[in-house]
Length: 144
Image 1 (cartoon, one colour):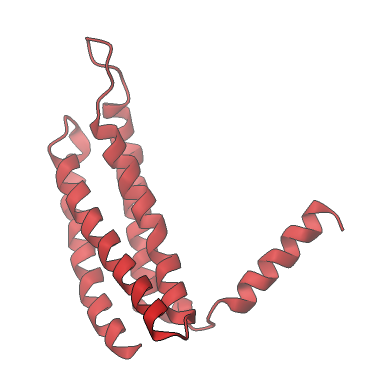
Image 2 (tube, rainbow, N blue to C red; image 1 turned 90 degrees about the horizontal axis):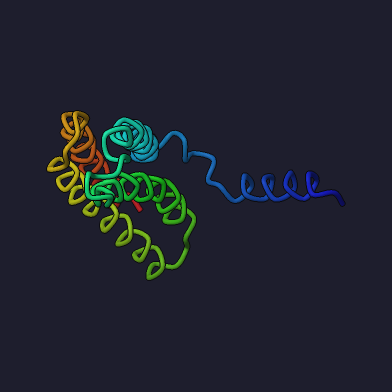
């Protein structure tokens, strides 16, 4: 079996395990929207934060822009994992992880807002969407 065929089989298995209604869930769609916003903000901030300072050091705030993307990437898989999980204890672990990710996104957005960048005015947009996400999260958790 070629590498390509192995990848196709693996992707089919992943699709088979994915809940069919996942893309219909408002919380899942909002998680994907937050990911798009985070990526856009990170790319925008990168131009301001990537150059070295006059003393040759890098701006430490650039790591927070990567953090918001990394945390946003993890939202949708945690939702899928919680939907798939049958055992209550493990389901709660995914829910706790989702809560932690959301809180870290808030925290890192405030850290980035203090950065020396023109793009920081977009961070309140991210937090506004995170507030909507938290509301969806509460109602979704009650339905599990």
